[in-house]
Every structure is written in C-alpha cells, then in structure tokens.
Amino acid sequence: MAKVKIYTTTTCVYCKMAKEFFKKNNVEYEELDVAKDANARDEMIQKSGQMGVPVIDIDGKVIIGFDEPELKKVLNLP
Amino acid sequence: MYDVIIIGGGPAGCAATVYTARKKLKTLLITESFGGQSIVSDDVQNWIGEKHISGFDLAKKMEDHVRNFPTDVDIKAPELAVGIKTLNCQPDKQNCIFEVISDKGNKYEGKTIILTAGARRRKLGIPGEKEFDGKGVAYCSTCDAPLFAEKKVAVVGGGNAGLEAVQDLFPYAEEIYLLEYSEKLKGDPITQEEIKKNPKLKEIIFNTETVRVNGDKFVTGLIYKNRLSGEEKELKVEGVFIEIGSVPNSEMAKYLVELDKWGQVKIDSKYATTSYPGIFAAGDVTDDPFKQNNISMGDGVKAALSAYAYLLQNK
Image 1 (cartoon, each protein chain N blue to C red):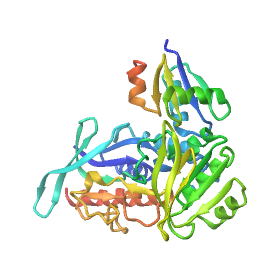
Image 2: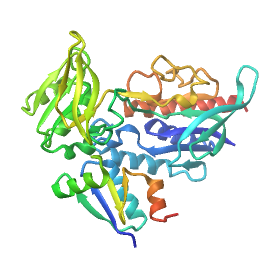
Image 3: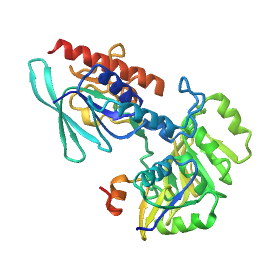
Image 4: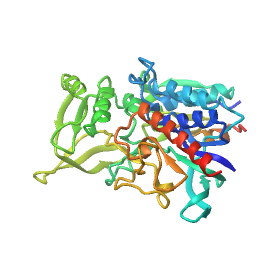
C-alpha cells in the first residue's frame, strides 16, 4: 500500500476534503498539522516549494492542493 | 436530452436542482464542487436556521440534498462546463436546444439552462502575483494563515473578506499591514473596531495601488503606490493575502446572454430570466446586487420555477 502523508491546517477545508476522500477510498494516511508542528511546516515548504495547504506526499510524489483526479491517478483508484 | 441543465453546485444551483427534481424534470447538474465560495468559511453565522455552521458542513448538506433524487437528477462532479451553444432554434431564439460542453470533452443537450456558476476570486493582475502564488501570495487566509507564523504580512483589500483575513492572521503573523485602494475601509464597522484594537495590525494604508510582488524563491516584499502622491514604497513582507472581491464565471455564456460591464449576467430579478429565452441564471454569476447564500438559494428557486413554466409553455 502507498505511504501517504498529508500536511494540513485545522481550518483548511480542502484538507478536510482530501481526508474525507482518503477515508471514503480506504486510504491510510499520516496527518501533519503544520500550524502546530514547525518541523513539518519546514519539511512541507521544502518538499513542495510553496506555502499552501494541503500538500500530499504519496511515496515521494508531491501533490499540491486537493486535486481529486490526480489523487485517483497516483493511487490507482477507479 | 435533459429538460434542464444546471451549471454550478453552489447554493443557487443546489436550490434549483431540488426544485426541478421535485417538478420531475429530467435534470443534469454539472459542477466542479458543491457549496460555492463559502465552503472555505470556518463559521457561517447567517445561514437561516443554523446559528453556526462551517462552510464545509453546509456544502455537504447541499450535496446530500441534491443526491437525494437519483431517478430525476444526473450529477456530473467534478466536471466543469466550459461552453454553451445553441444547436437548433425556431425563429426569434424560440425553443432552442442547448449544448453544454465540459472540460472532459463531454457534450450534454438540454431544453433549458440554469446558469449558477458563481464567481471566483479577483486577482491583482500585477507582476509577481502569479509567479509567487503559493510562495507567499495567498488567497485563502482560513487555509494558509498558520503558514505565516512569526512573519510580516500584507493584506490587500479593506472589504469584509480583507478584514476577516486580518483576523485569521492575528494568532500567527508577527506584523500585519492592511492596504486599501480607497480612502476608507468598506468592511463592517464592528470588525473594523475589533481589528484596530489588536497591536499586531501595524498600519492601515489608504489610497494604495499595488504595483509588484517582489521575491526570490518566496515573497520578500510588496511594492505599492500612493494614489494621491504617486510615490512608490516597498513593504518588507513575506506574505501577501489578496482579498479584493470576485469575478463572475460567465465566460461560457458570453456569446448568448447579455452581461453588464463587470461580466455579470443580467437577469430580470423577478423571474431569473436572462436576455436569452430558455437560459435562466441565479446567484453570484448574476447582476443581483447582494451576494449572499440565502439570496442565491431563493434566486435559484426562481430560476427553477421559471424554467418549469418555460417548458410547459414550449411543449
């Protein structure tokens, strides 16, 4: 199974949408709240080269924002 | 062939869908997402019947409601309508068949259109804005404010959205500068009073026109001009939050319906009719002066009932 990390803030609705999408499709994920965790924040900015959430890392492939078609493609979902 | 094609799944589109479904009209709802622009709002306090509800929960309720009519309503989501054309009409634009073309290349035919495509954020249109989008330039303060912890930031726009962005940034940013184009703030006086009490708001700068976003990998500053003196200055900030209103998503219909000078679809607010017979419109895509969820819903209902009446007449 793919290793999925999602960088979020608690008030970000696109983060909620992404997490709902993972739950609906039974995708396990690790969530890092960049509002609380400064290390995760730096890691996210370094990985994605930008400062918007959510950032999703699937086995090293970095997706910025909640891009449902792209997530389906990368996770091989129907 | 659908009786009605509804374009956009915000409050206007969802309300229209519920009404066309209950009239047993064969309905297609095509939308990128549900809930409209207030989906990013953390706490909506003016949705009648709910003292507090998040934009996200409100959007889910709308989506659940429109998905409740599977026999009469087809839903294509996420899918974006990019064009509308007429296939064949009787003289004087009567009884047209409309074709909606989507970003996936799909084509859908309908006897009527309800355009509820809403609006999107207006951009500054200055050098550096696009280049540093997401690299300091931000459009969603509820989402991204925490990324600007201990940083100096500018907020452009003194309407309600701008004032709320300042509030969203208070817990995180070190210093905040608010830039307004005119000589006074347009947001609610209550919010103005509140933000002025917080020492993190260093300055409200009036009569400003933004000129350029500077940066290297990320934003390092914002150049602005005093509109009275013409003098240019740089604010050394690492974040620029842009909250300067919205642009209607009317491009797909611009060759068919009349628009006002801001690109808003002109409607007869009594019946939600446009200048083109068989095309109805509601919500933020229209020239209705009040951009509100509750109003969009009501106007969406008008559009649905008008489409129903049109279909009865043109059978």
